[in-house]
Image 1 (tube, rainbow over the protein chains, first blue to last red):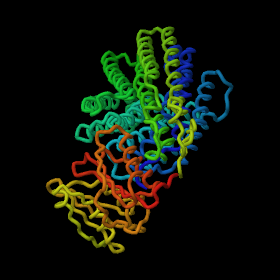
Image 2 (image 1 turned 180 degrees about the vertical axis):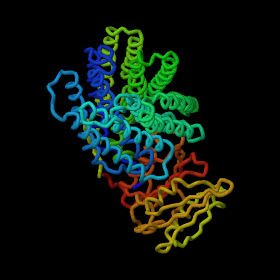
Image 3 (image 1 turned 90 degrees about the vertical axis):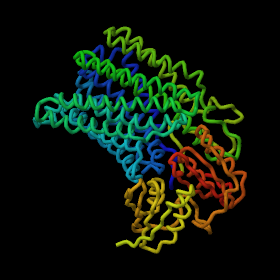
Image 4 (image 1 turned 90 degrees about the horizontal axis):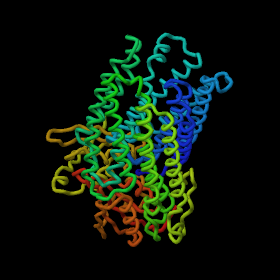
Length: 450
Length: 177
């Protein structure tokens, strides 16, 4: 069948993701990981992977299971596989976090925990990539946003592969010189493939379509957008392919990273141009909360880009790299993620609940499922807290950082509660809430005719 | 070697017409093993997908002046039937009556275009056709139309910006999930 239906397990991914976001923020409040510990300390690795796998990757996978079918106007390859993929990723993540606790000496050693983490995470992501890849392959030739997603999926495969090499290294399983060199010098490749390729590049592609859709802006598929895709793909290919080659040949990937960095700047400049066009040329003058907050997140991407340039110019990456990663993860990626979650949860809930009776009986609008005036204060608190926290990292004020993290936790919990209220249809007037022929949606599961 | 039936829709497109039904008619008329060679003024990306879902592979080649030649080759199991979402009806792929109702939903916030189309279909009688203009392919609408027993045909206009969908009200009005 042509057309897209709802994805069965997307809400389960979102639910698990939000729990890890709140967990990670709570850990920061408690002073676990950077800045209290060193950047590469096991405690920091634990915190970072709660954010990047537990929150951001689960959020992205869940969103893609729903959104790739929309992009290609075809059905998801399988509505069943995302569930075992989620279980494998969650089990793998827990094994990975346990492994970090063992490295930190906070937990007794469990034999082969690192190996289990590698196998579980590897197979979970492979299953997710397979499901999305087959969906994309069935829709060849791909439109531009779908091509961005394809590059993103290649990047997550590379990120997981680097991660597995590191994990096996920590577990003492790798003995070849190359793999050890990769472990010693390859961390930037893992970080760039993950935060840059998988999360940022995919978000860029998806945002092109989502922003156009929600603001009634013209779709962008002209030469600048195609160049954004090409330059980004080239930069990521350099990181993922030339990076390891450079480590093998020269002992470090610095030159490859410099070239990739310069190309990414051109890519991001073109993307900024596209984003400005999308907002300027919109037909809809008054835009919804999700589009306004996405704008704030995009401003944080611009700020992160400027910070990168400044740190590179001043040679201060070593000292402030943590602040930069924090800004990318929370100001840009989580900011965009929370903003879009606010809309996506309302939309899929509305379609699931009211789709079957549309036109037959009075139904609420999508916007009746949310109460923006209440949600907006949480979003502002979130972004202000992120900015204060970033400043604290740059100014090296760890105690104030923990207070800012507490504000982030409060704001994220507020937004999470709004999402639950949307899912529960609490904001809809009682008379319209459940007309005949509808049923109350479940919190973490979507009824889909298979 | 596949034998190709040639269809040139460039004159129709230049005149501002909608060749979708002509193309689907030509596909219907193919003998087993025959392919379709289509000439168009732009690359008909949505059509590639529609025929792909019916088991046709394609080879697209850009001609001079931005025009395109696309060869559709049937693979094993290809059917010449209309779009899969459409339930089998007696006049499948045949001529549809002129639209009884036209809507321009291009300036509406999503999902309002879908809401209005579904509301309109509820007021129409079996066999009538509704035409609607949209600013994007209504991907969530199609499964809902199929569930309600309606047929549809849709494609982007040559400008690539406006999506025109024709919906023929089915005989199984009122079927819900």
